[in-house]
Picture 1: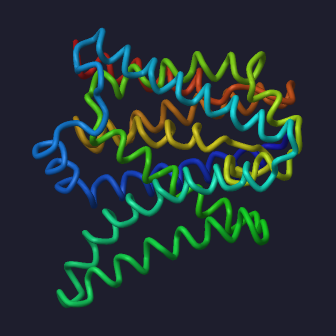
Picture 2: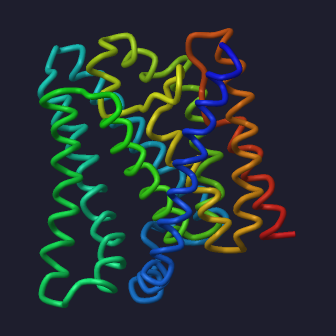
Length: 279
């Protein structure tokens, strides 16, 4: 690893984080309306500390089972089914969240009669590009750009519509799962079964390093949470701590083929936000 490669990687992460902050700022009122009118987007076990821990545990369990399904599909050489499952999960999130983001922009500049059609066209275009990169031809720059957008949108949405306690516990829970998944769990198997297929729709290239889509979601979620709950300066401070953790992880990654991307950045980011929100 050279210094220019490391700088390139962290710049890519910073650009995605700033995009998420822009999305969060753009959708701030929409997200507040969603929470005020229909409640938090995800809180099946409630919003207490125990409930938030249970909420995080449920999501980790869902991800674990989903990964097992993907491993099973790859072990049976069911490549098309594998791609369909990846496409379905990505396109649903991308369509709905792009609708929210573009709607808030379009209504300011476009006549009422054209707002919904343009919103649908923009959202469907993102879905079409996801399908193209998964089913037709994998163009790394296009795939990376689309997945970066989806990761930023999901991170922003989670930060703004999850209960604050769940939003803090979730990165910690997934960091623990990340350690297991990379070293012992199904993710290690998945990566080894067919890199060109497995990583399509699931990761982006940040310079000479590969970051999972889940990494991107959480790298963007905590700064967006700080922006939503506190202020822009604290959001930028949170981003700086997370990125310092990313740098540390990438440096360590030069000594190993695989490393979990979440633990160090999430420990730093969550520690700062928990301190400012609750003490």
